[in-house]
Amino acid sequence: MEKRMTLEQIDEAAEYVRGHTAHRPSVGLVLGSGLGALADQIQKADRIPYQEIPHFPVSTVAGHSGQAVIGQLEGRPVLAMQGRVHYYEGYSMSQVAFPIRVMQRAGIETLIITNAAGGFNLDWQIGDLMLITDHINMPGLVGTSPLRGPNLDVFGPRFPSMTRAYDPELSQLARDVAEQEGILLREGVYVGLGGPFYETPAELRMLRTIGADAVGMSTVAEVTAACHGGMRVLGISGISNIVLFDASQGEAPHHKEVMEAGLRTVPMLMAVVKGVLRRLPPSA
Image (cartoon, rainbow, N blue to C red; front, side, top):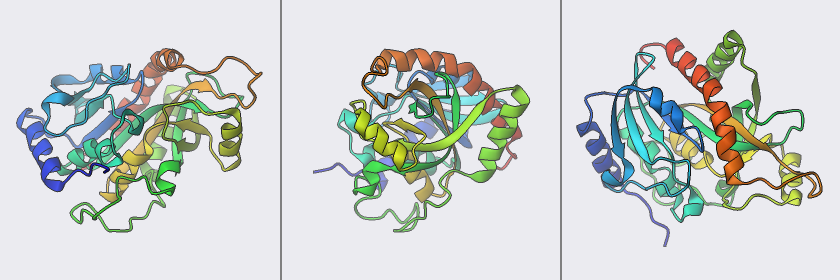
């Protein structure tokens, strides 16, 4: 039976986090494969390994350090998840979304979520950033969702709208920062899959046909939970590889490539995230 996290478990984890730091974060960050170095920029940081937080799922994938880092970034209190868990690791979608629920119960209302993704546009380059303007939740469309089961009314309604999953104002802030910093910021639709395998060329052609600009194995469950709980979300993908629509086009993707691309992406991602934090109103 799929494991569903209860409100009591969420609150126990949130209280543990709040009890192990004097910071009161207003912004949450989720850092994907190879992008965890951004958390090293957080000042006066308290670090809590996931395995110490009650009921918290533990990362098992290379490139996901597996700790909550709480402190100051650009003068704003933040809680960064340095690494995430994925459905393919054997966790339920409820567990995948558990860190987001903990953030919500800890009072965080703004979420900046990042990932490494394969790009569909052959004119793009490995290491590019893509502002996520919308997503296609493939697991969710067939019922594999963190919202499956009894609704947790304290977070939101039984049937939440996903019309504006990615906040337009936050997205515009990211555009403004990228322009000012001279950073090329692509834009597009992220499609989330279950993984852990990379897609076949036929599957990639199908995804391109339905409107995908980038593909990955995370993010959509977290954003679903975030929207259900009323969070404002900014999503950014680091393009880790350009997908192969034909098996004869080149070498197949691999996780080492994803990690290496993440290192190239981090400086630009840092600049955009820090710039957005500087521009957020004090109440955000």
